[in-house]
Structures are given as structure tokens and as C-alpha cells.
Image (spheres, rainbow over the protein chains, first blue to last red):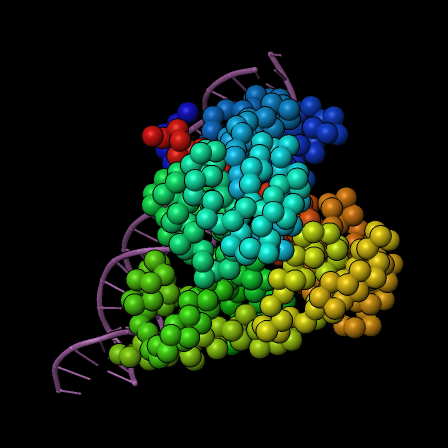
Length: 212
Length: 212
DNA sequence: TAGATTGTTAATCGATTAACAATC
DNA sequence: TAGATTGTTAATCGATTAACAATC
């Protein structure tokens, strides 16, 4: 594998390729050209070829790409061939929704535990998983080799919780708290700032109003 | 206001400026220079000035920006000075979580109704709001002048529900369904593809593994 | 072999950063 | 007025698109 850094713009497009290829595969389609994929996905064929070639040659000249093979390769690039141990920190509505939502399991995300600082929730079962007290989180992360923490707590506590996670060996944080986390290099943070997303929507609704 | 199109890259940064300025305001800070903001937000001062100047001159040479004023102006740009009527389509875990989560209300997002196609949920109260049958959605959107629909249904139904929403005058769709919607120009779609986001995280976790 | 389509280089476009004149 | 900092133009950087030679 090459050593040159791949831009986050490319990475951000990979899951979408993965999704479309999975659908094509489910439809029993064996082969696809960059031009055909371009038509379906509404991105340029040129971009598709450039993107794939960041990771080596997946296609065959004169033939195109094998759907199944490409699907699997992109899955590997995204790390979906590996198991990830995951906890949810914050058992409020959003945390519970994500826990239930987690048919992520079939993608190798193993839901190992759930934590909250509210004693009223201790022991509550969500998807066969009892909510544990926040105090137990650090030891749990260490002892169970948790890779990923899903942060669904209010912004006030998020920074200090993130620090504790980092100290105990977490590798990635999926951050739903509305605050920017500052973590050391090598620890990955992926932010899902829902209200930012909603504001983008209102901007665009509004902009269109004014233009017409 | 200028007529030149503002890039989505700029728009995507506005909510973050808005958040930081809100925090500064809450701390009682009255004025800030692009350089100070640059230090706090870890973006270049140059970018900050360029971004703001897309919308006109908000600052004063030799002085900087008035925090309160800038905060409010960005809020207006994002359309947060207007009221938005919103429904949630899909009363599953995620839909319920978003409904409860909705202290969005103080930002002018008025939660007007919730719909599901599962009869077992009809009448269930979520935040003083009964879940209505999906069949009632179209008339409801029309009659209550709903601007925004939050789509939290499985991908299978999402495309056809989106069409119905569009036909009845929706202006924006906040799409949590794992599918790309195809809407006519003038209708805004903001996607929140959670599994895409999680895959970006695993890519980055994985990449770092291999580099070291 | 001829046709198709990739892989890859070159050209273009757009976004970010740097520099500095304008001005508070 | 002198100093500070914006607004804005110019330079740079990176990402996207176009073109085409390589090759299946």
C-alpha cells in the first residue's frame, strides 16, 4: 500500500461507493464501468477512477470493475473486515437510540457496554445490556480493550470524559456532544454535530427563498 | 446582499463560528479579532476574514469584531431568526430521540407532529405529541405549512415518502435514511448518514494503525 | 485484432493562505 | 497621530476534471 496521505475528501466518498456497490451486488450485477457508476451516483467517472486508484488498481482495462471484488476491497479499506469493540457513553435518548439502531453489529461493531452518570438509569436494560455507572467506564475500557466510544452526553462533561477515554486506550471517539474535543495525535475523532447539520439545512432553505 | 453564490464549504463552517461566538458572548466577551478567534478555533485568521466577508463587512478596522453583533448576524444568515415548522417522519428509536432532543425549539424549530406507519405506535405520546398514522402526513404538511421534515424511516420507504413531502410543499428534508434522495431543484436535502460517519472513523483508526 | 475502459498525466478550477493597502 | 486590524487582492495549494496512452 502506498505511503502518500489520502485526502479526507476521498475518504468521505468511500462509504457512499461502498453503499452503491453493495446494492449493485445485491441486484446480482457482476461488473460495472466507471461511466456506468458515474451515471448512477452522479459523480464524474474521472473522479471515480481517481478515487479508486488512490488505493491501487481495482479494475481491468477494457472491462471495468468487478462489483463484488471492489465492494470487498473498499470494505477492507474502511476497516470493516476487522472487529471493533464499542461502548456508548451517555444512556439518554440519543444513546439509547444508537444502541438499538445498532444493526451496525453485522459490520463488526460489537456493542460491549453502556454508561451513564445518572443513577436512575443504572441497571436499566437496553438491548440486553445494563447501563453501568460512569465510574466504571475507565476500568472497563482498559480491561475490555474498547476501540471506539460513542459520546452521547451533554457538552459540559464531554471534554473530561474524552480525556479519560484517551488515558485508558481508546482509539476513536464518535462524538455527538456539541463541543470540539481536543485529543492527542493518533486518536481519531469523528464529529456528528446534529445542530450544525440542521443549520446548514435552514441556510439553504432560506437562501433559496431570497433568490426567487 | 451579494448575488454571488457562496460555497457550501463556507456554509459548513458557519454553525461552528456561531457556536464559538455564542460561547464567547456567554462569557461576557464583547470584542474579538480574527487572530484571537483563529487561536481559539484553530483555523487561519485569513479564512475567518474571508468567510465573514462573503456576507459583508461585519468588523471594524483596527478594532475587530463585536461578538454580540457578529453572533446575531451569523444567526440571521443561518435563518435562525425565522420560525420553522417541523415534523418527524418515523417514530422509531431515532425519531423519538430527536423529538426529545429537540431543545432545538429555542432556535425556532417548532415540533408540530410525528408520523409512523406502524399502527402499534399510533397515539403514543412523545413529548406531548401523539404519533399519527402515515396516511395523514400529506394533508398535515399541506394544512400546517410544514417547512422541514425529519426523515427517520428505513431506507426502503424513504424515497417515496420524500416524494410525497415534496408534492405537499415541504422546503427541506433532514434525511437520516440511508439512501440518497432525488428531489427537484429548490428543495433542500441535508443528509445525516450515520453509518458513513462511523466508517470514516474506522478508516482513520485503521490507517493510523498501519502507519505506525 | 479492434473496441472498450482503465490508470495516469496534464489542465482547470476552486478554495485556502499570504500580503498589504485602507481605515478605524 | 500611531497602532491595530479589517477588507480585499494576489499567490499558493489542493482537488476535480479532461485527455489520452496503456492494456485487457
